[in-house]
Image (cartoon, rainbow, N blue to C red; front, side):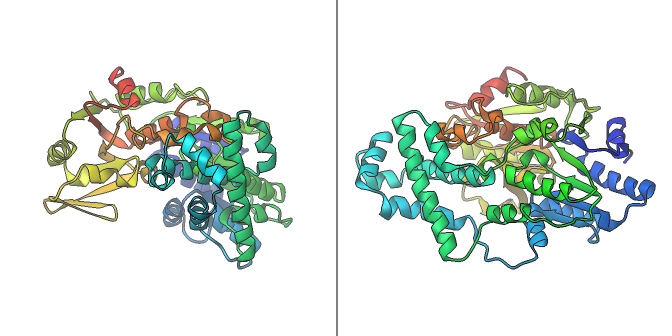
Length: 457
């Protein structure tokens, strides 16, 4: 595969840069090509490079392509490598357990009354089992993750909430957060956010000359602080790669504004845009770009494709999800089809006794299909994509639990627009296809996103 002109510009540029790499534009290919170019033209050595990516899967993929002699880490593995010390690490399960336990056994009588009023419920035990309340607990988890990942002050934040209702919720969150911090201390343990914060405070010399940050749109403030620490203690260049259209990890603390405001942090940085997609058709790009740029805080990109496919998005309206899904599955080749849902459990609404589902593999008529959440499918592609549950439900697309009013004070400004992140999630889903994306939509309850797409195609 040859470099196209925009890719070649990013490979040969030798200053700090941000590469805006849209879906299917060859981001990983450009990272590998640039490392090769720097080795050939500047005689750079393996030890001169640091490559950081967001997930273990993307790190392993880069290791397969670049070899094991280059330092390639997730942010958490990078932090461990810097600290060079064993820590007792705890997973997110502790925080989830503390949130559950608080509302089960530690909630006050006054808080119970407030919660019953807030959720229009009369029985507290019944409230605990409601999906809306489970979503409320998920919101608290997200809030605390955002607080930690962006080094925000909970006490200060309490002052910015104006209504009695929001102040009451924040008071509950502060109590839960304090219990969480106490439990970490008592167990002599830290979580992954604590680990990154500790590493960013280390004052040591780093020998890296070239620092590559993959999936930069998913950076949090503490991750960015860690990179700045390394950058400030080395004579290095910074190369950021990512796509603001595909920032979908807000719930884990990511702050899209870091990418959008990068020139405030690094005034000398040059911004490049990869414009040609090798995955999607021109028609799909046109629809997807109109859809995503309704978000106010997105960087417009004039992308193009040499592929032309009429009707690259097809809406499948159904009254019976199982029957319609089976009909569609029968019409597609298993080896070229990816089934996606907004949530892990979406698949169960669409399969009957003729299907066998286990750990992401869907078996039907002795054939296996891959089923993933849209988040898990980021970076993947397939000829055909089926997106399930594009409905106007709490757990549909958009997921209505992700836009709680309380989160607006700890979210990036890029998420001020209604369902901004959910719009990016849907964008990621529909752009996984090389040829066609099918949207599974209940006839009597279509998503607001479906109505938008219907007017485009």
